[in-house]
Length: 312
Image 1: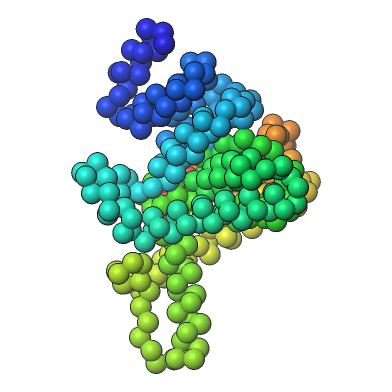
Image 2: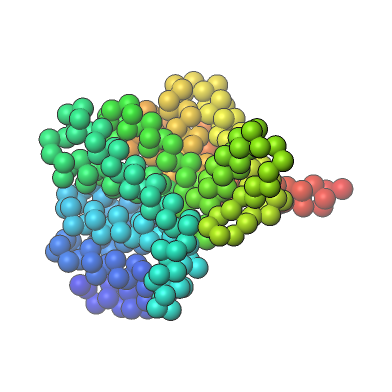
């Protein structure tokens, strides 16, 4: 390791502990120094960019590197509150958290299903290679990191459809992940289940619970409104891109990828492609969607109303 690189890492250590640990682990397979050191920060911050490699993590061609990146993508998708509990020596708090269990369950379930689909349809020769590709892409898309180790746009339609749905999950609340966030998905799903129960038990008192905690009705309403607004922005963005001449798959996957800050989509914006060929107006639309998705919808609405108030 060069003296300048070592000095740079040591200077940033207090604020970049996860990235530093990951850096050590990525160096273990004896790769070149520049590529891993530049790439280690991006899984920790779920940033969908590989700063030195056009082929993303696939350019390393090393399963050990991929599994290290998977580990830190998973860690980055966990709430910082749970990180704090872990650092305080309370690891069981993490496994008692219902959002964490749901998050891990989604990733591992998607991994198993995608791996089986790739194997059954003959896309991969062995179960190891199928699991290797599946866990990396399921984790990358769910946490909105956006790395790729394969051109998943060439995968079977079922696997692509599942990856598309994972774009709307995101990490846990209080993490660096984008998109809707796991806890909101849980609240909306439980609200739907309770509303269905009330069709047969109209007088039952059925609060929405996350873990053992009952969620206030106003919070449930706020989360449901956010979810509807997110889907509305996704649909509007896809329609605007289609209006500009993009095919339906490219338009709506680009809308979901940018609004959720995922990165790659499908079709013309797949992992082997990029956004460079899109018209300027389409890039402007996606730029706005990325800002809205990163700051979240309610933040943008508050800023809009504050701006309107200043104009009066």
